Image (cartoon, rainbow, N blue to C red; front, side):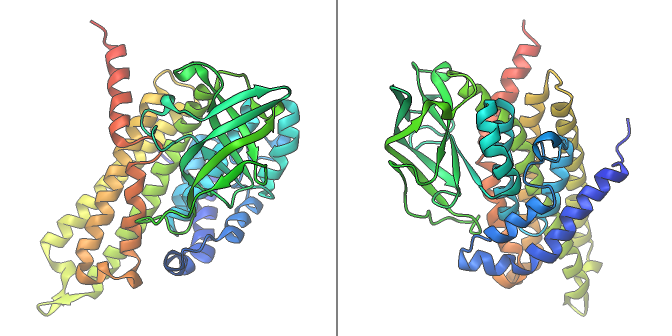
Length: 382
């Protein structure tokens, strides 16, 4: 059991972190304040092989592992968790199209997604089906060689900006077996978007409703097999949960680094506050908790890479533990900064705002507990 990164993995992390330091971090506060979506900077990630992390090399992808992916997103998120998280969503869709799409679909879309000529959004959540995702109501009804879509998706990152929307729709009866996945290209008649949501954080990426009003798409836009859409969605979310945890880790590490520097510069009662044992204990606990979160995350990624029987449980556990831990660490970093931590110029309050939503999306942390408990009961049936 070797916990050290390989030379290649260290290089992958360093590449992502260096890009974040040079191209993301210097602009993150300004992007946040201006609600600016840095799409051109995000597209530069394609040139670094970060737009199709899990896609095979034969299709232009990087053919990297889930563990490698967590290194990339931790590195990128050190510059801006919100910006890194959007790239995670694009990668999830790209992987799903490459994994489950027809040869025709893959030939049409994978090269564009790899190069980020096209950027993609993932559409599962609806106004009345969040945690109960299998209760979604958006319908796709066959009409000749087409599907007619009607319904609304909520909280969609990239809404109105992305070129391609992977939507989970109901093609059959109630429950998960009646759900299919389809691709909807931006500009399709009947596809529209709500107003940009006003959010606590994640200001560097747009979030809107995605609306389908008699939206006609060819049946060839069906991803994989009809009725398997919910299965595909959940497989995508296993990886998505690891990535959002990695984004939390990158943001929290940045907050800890800022706090560690700040306490050595800030003086109170005639000396640096770093000399206070109360501060030292806070920093020690924050470092310990982040190291534990990092090891847990990488173990879960390893299990997903090796198709371990308990991989989904570990993805849920890692998502719950890492996002909760990292939010607490970032919040503690803000507290250490005192009033300055509450000011935008220091970058701490942005990290806190961005990381808060990670405890909600990709399945709330309460739903993670449901998944963990169900798996635990199945493993230990009376």
